[in-house]
Image (cartoon, rainbow, N blue to C red; front, side, top):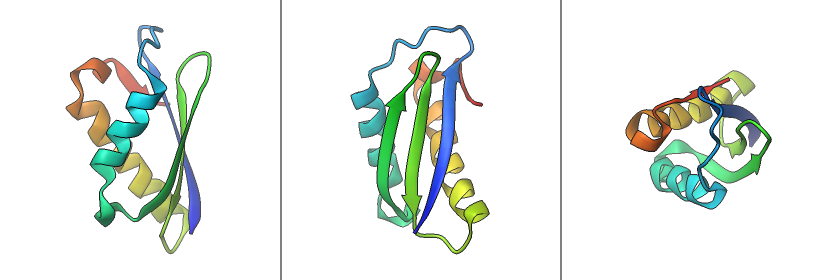
Length: 86
């Protein structure tokens, strides 16, 4: 189990997205095939920190899995179209 971190923030500075909803969207998209065992989200002043414990062989692999999940969510949710991984 390896911890991975992703930080997302909106380009326009408007962080009007519920933390609970973001967590639910990520879990729904993660499914069992993503190897994500724990997922935590922390709201910051400019965006969200997403921390996941991933069943992976190395830190780069864990980061890649989490980054892919987050990127998919940003692409698939129209409300997050102005958000980016930072």
